[in-house]
Image (cartoon, rainbow, N blue to C red; front, side, top):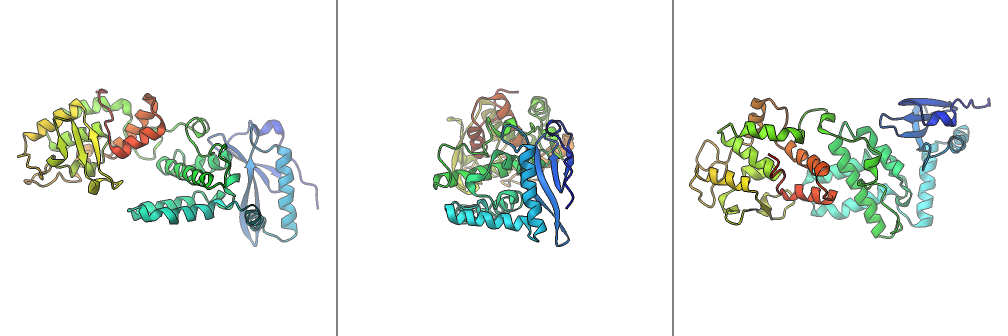
Length: 376
C-alpha cells in the first residue's frame, strides 16, 4: 500500500481557518466556527460514508498530530481487514464496560430517564429528555461515563450553541445531570470535575450568546426594556398592564392570565401561585415590587375583586384576558419579540449584571420572582 501523505504540520493545527482539512489517508482536522478543533476519520463501509471522531486537537488536552496519525493508522488497519471501525470501537467499549463495571453514557442516561420520568407530569418534557440525549448526544452514548471529556461535550454543543441556544443550554444541563448522577453512584471519582459544567468552564470555551444571535427575535435585549416599558405605560389596554406585570415578575403568560384575586395579598406584597397553575407542579410565593403592587391596585379599580375573579380580565365579565391579547399587543408595537421571551431577557440580565450563581438565576425563573425591579 502506498505511503500515506502527511499534509498537515503541527504549527498549522492551531492556525487553520474553519473547515475540513485533510492530512491524507482519510484523516482530517475539522475546525469549527467556534474555534474548536477535532481530528476525524472519514471513510466508507459497504458504500456508506462514515465518520469517526478521534479526539480534540492541540493543547492543553487534545491529541497531538502524531497521536492522531497513530489512531488513524489503527482505523485504517481495521478497514483493510474488512471491519467497521465504529462497530469495533463500540464492541471494545462494551467489553470495557463489562470489565470495569462502568456504564456507557447512553445506557446510563436511558436508565436515569426511566427512573425519573414517572415524576415528570409533562409528556413533552419526557420526550425532550429522550430525544436530546439520543440525537444530539449520540457521539458520547458509546463512551463510558468516566471517560467523557470537556472536548466531548464541547463538540456536541458547539454546532448548535448559537443557532439553537435554548436546546443547547438544556442539553448541556441534562448531560451535566447525568454525569452528576453517575458520580453519585460511584462510576466517576468524586474529586473529578464535571466536564459539562458551565460556570468557569464551558462558558470560557463556547461563544458568548446574546439575543442577537437568535434565528428569530423572540427575546428583547435587556438594555432595551426600560424604553419599551415606558412605551407600554402610555397605553391603557389591560394587555399592556398585564405585560408590564409579566416583565416585572418574569412569570409565564399563563400564570399571569390565570391569576385570581384570592392569590394576592397586597398588604404583604405577595402573590401565591397555586400548584395547579405552576409548571413545576408546586405552589409558590412571589414577592412583589412596589411597581407590581401599584399595577395591582390600579387593576383592582377595574373589577369587583371577588376572590375567584381574574385579576387581568378580558372583554367579558370574569373572563380571563385572551391568551393572544399580549402577543397581538407586541405585534402592534412592532418589537418582534414574544411574551415568553422576556424570561430569556431576565436570564441574560441576571447572568450579566448580578453576582448570583447560575443555579439561583435558574431557580428565579422557576419561581417567577421579581426580575427588573428598579431598572426602569
